[in-house]
Length: 340
Image (cartoon, rainbow, N blue to C red; front, top):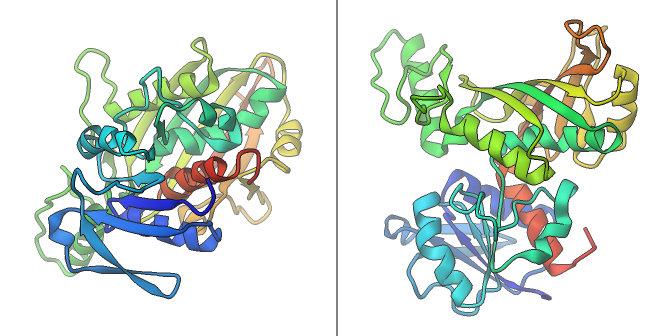
C-alpha cells in the first residue's frame, strides 16, 4: 500500500486536527487526503503541507478510491459509515468504542500487539485513551514479570470529551473568576475548579461507569489475559489537555523499583520523568503535545510487604497517543508492515 489515499472522518474535531498534524510530523507517505465531516463544516478548509484541503460532507459515496479511513466522529457515525468504507475497499482505523470488543476486530496498540493488525477484516479499533495510557508502560513490565492485578485512578482532561468540552472549561473558568454565572451545556457538572466522576452512564448494578468498564474489558483483550484483575476509577478533572493516572500493579514475582526503571528506560513510547529531589514528576502540562507516555513516582507499594507491587504515576496526551497518534501508527504498519 504505497502512497495511499487517506480519508479523515471527523476532520474538524479535536482529534481530527491532530490527525493532520501527525501525518505531517511523521512524514506519512500518501497520495491524496480527504477531509470528511458533517454538512455543518462545508466551506471550511484545513491547512495541510502547504495546501488547503476543502472539507467535504460525509456521505455514503465518500470512500471511492480511499485506501485508509481514519475515523474519529463518534460510535454512531462509525457504526453507520465504517462498513460502507470497508465495502468501498478502505481499511478503517476507528477511534470510537463501536467495534473494540468485536471478536473479529483487532484492538491495537502498536507497541504491544502490532502483529494483530494483519488479522483485520477491514476494521481495526483504536483502544480507549485511558487503556492506552496505562498499558504502554505496563506492557514491557508484564513481558518480564506477569502482572496479576492493576488498580488505577484516572484524572481525565477536557480533551477526552472533545473540543466543545475544552471550550466549556475555558469559558466556565473565566466566568468563575469574573464572578459571573455559567450554565454548562456539554458536561453534567460545574467544571471550573471541580472534579467529578467520568461523565458516562453508571451501571446501577456494578456502580462502574462506561469508561471504567471499557478500561477493564479492553485491557484483558489487548493483553490476551482474561485472568488479570483490574480495578479502575475514572474522574474528570479541570485540565484542558492530557490525561494522568495513578497506577498500582501487582506482579507474579517480586519486583523492585530499580527493575521497573531499568525496564522502562528503553521501552518504546515511554519517557521517565522521576526526580524525587526536585519533586518533579509527570504532569499533563508537560505531556501535552508529546508522543510519549510520561512515567514517574516509581516506588514500592508499602501496603504490600511481599514486594510484588509497585506504584507509578503517568501522564499522556489523550489527543495524541490516546487517539490520533496511535491510529496513525497503525496506518504506518499497514503501509509498511514490519517497519515503523
